[in-house]
Length: 127
Image (cartoon, rainbow, N blue to C red; front, top):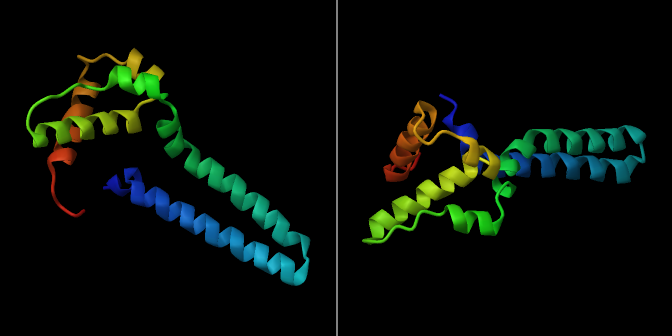
């Protein structure tokens, strides 16, 4: 039901929303010089960090050398390569390096993740 929370567009929308809130408060502060707008700016920045950190943690949790080590080396036609890249991206997005190393690759949770990621990668719909 809440699959949109994992999409990149949701993250981009949140970033735009926070930038709009901060710029409005900065504009109002320069117009009125009231301290309440500084408090709003600080609280908005703190809330943005709190809300967006889990999303960015998955992106920054992997170093390039770790990504190269973990990439599946698919060869074949273009569609299978796209699927492999999509599955690799889903892995980088959903797991940090340490979590991925510690996860049981034969466990039901990981198999369910791979199944859902494969379905998402093969889905050509717009939504």
